[in-house]
Length: 76
Image (cartoon, rainbow, N blue to C red; front, side):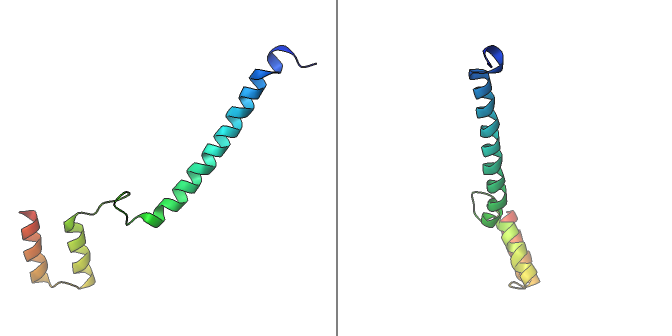
């Protein structure tokens, strides 16, 4: 009935490509939604020492004088 171009391996290859792309999209979507949980990890984002110092100053862990001293030391 469906012989030649409309059946057989071309149709099977199309199905494999379709379902393969659907699976890839699902895996990609899961990866995108779960990677934000690990944003503090060095693998995804590495903060510089100056970034850490700025955060400590913003939290009030260091005074302005200490911040300026440490900043000067880090900047070399």
